[in-house]
Length: 287
Image 1 (cartoon, rainbow, N blue to C red):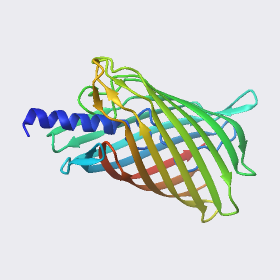
Image 2 (image 1 turned 30 degrees about the vertical axis):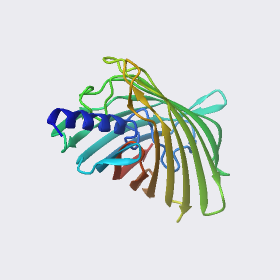
Image 3 (image 1 turned 135 degrees about the vertical axis):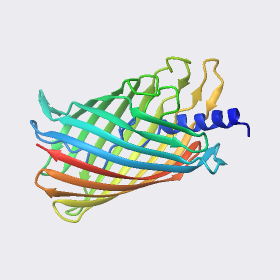
């Protein structure tokens, strides 16, 4: 494979990966277990994430086309959330700023910088901490503010995007809680090439086991489909996704205001794009 063709293939794969980059650094603000808990007005959260995502295999139409991609993505995310009242409803305006370093060994490329800034929030129509039932609706907007927009940097795209979510939490007993989240993402045209991407649909299911009042473990399943990409002439450059992911979570309030969370995530099936695995640490401070 020539150097030029190889780089074109790799850029297409990583561009597709940017739609699915985990844990909230794109328009896709990934909901972790418990994220749809509506907290009392006046609560503030400062959250820091550290992630390491890896991929060697990449797929097209369900077939593995690359086995030595060498994708390494190390990311930090800063997130501020403020809970307040809007009439009778709880809302939580927030801002998310990702940054990181990406290396793709197959392409010989390396990018670092600030990713696209995300802003938005959730409105809860049900937020009952006593019964554990919560129902919220979210809107997040991703602005094309990041670095290396046209170099396949997974944290940065040269377009606007909107992420709509609905999340529901319900207790299944004293020790078990179920979280269900439905999500749709819409993408503006790429501002330089006018390339288009169809909407992406995702569904999440989290099953949490409460070891104690302060600590829980969870298993999460995600299915994603859609997001076919076309160039300005209408030619398909990346076919639609049909992917599955499993994530395992441990989280605990180690002090009254401090929560630690660790996760391991693994793609189970990938129709198009890199098959990733990764780890994440999260530190939350409530005040």
